[in-house]
Image (cartoon, rainbow, N blue to C red):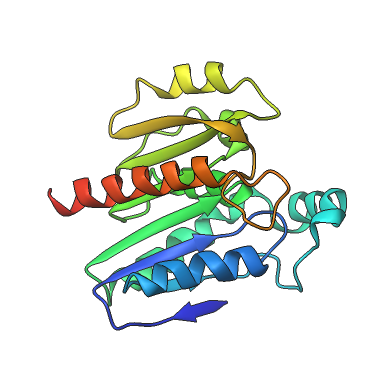
Length: 198
């Protein structure tokens, strides 16, 4: 697990993609830490990260050994953090975003941010109990518009569809899109600001 501590009153839990705690996750954790937040990034794979060229193997490993039901462990982690922090947020990427989404019903957190969680479409029955920011890639492996349409009616959910491909936030990915990544960061800043004003 990555832990970066500033002794702030706010903690963020970062949930990685199928690849594990790779250089992109290190970069994300460092970015939130530089903003003054305390950062926790659990290694859900419990092994060395996969390379992007090992995508199929990474996916099989994630589905067989981790799965999306691991959200219960993330909820427990968030509950433990709430004992020491005034605010806790969960931020997920891809598979991690779907795990984060599954946490929004019961985890006692201030907010959840999901980056291109394509499997959220399998959990549309989830009813958020906290504010959620969903950032979808327009070009993904599923019907993004249909999924957004079904999520739009849910309370306390902000939705944005970015003109990019799955993985657009990841500067190590061939699908990295600097412009859309910056736009997403602006949405995230607005999301944090809206919660701090509550």
